[in-house]
Amino acid sequence: MNWKIIFQLSIFGLIMAFATVSLIPEKVEPAFWLLIFIFCAYVIAKVCPGKYFLHGFLVSMVNCIWITAVHIAFRETYEANHPQMASMGTSMPSVLSIHPRLAMAIMGPIFGAMFGIILGLFSFVASKIVKKEALV
Image (cartoon, rainbow, N blue to C red):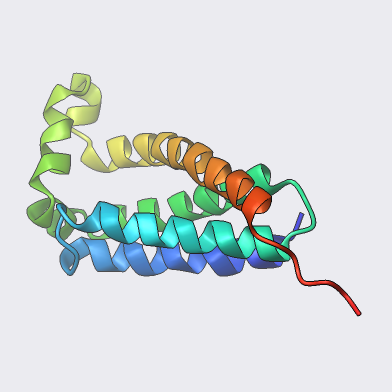
């Protein structure tokens, strides 16, 4: 496993965590993530020696740590700028709806794993398309 590249690519998650609190609107956030996933998949395919899916999955899992921590820390501002996410709390069990930070802490890794599968698949597909540079 190339932990250095996993950590380096996860910095995009940290940047997005802060950017989504108040700068990036909820409606355009998926476009940013799509670009980030394509770039990360390309880098993983180009740099990593194998286990492309696992590298992509782990990048998203580290991302979820950054994103969950920042969104919990800035919950009020995040929910003010993301009303759809804030409304999800009303459909959760009562114990989670009265503890939104706990709900975020529980749901963060679930979303991280779901997006990890997506980035893992992107990385695997990119590994079939991207040619590695020949070592001289």
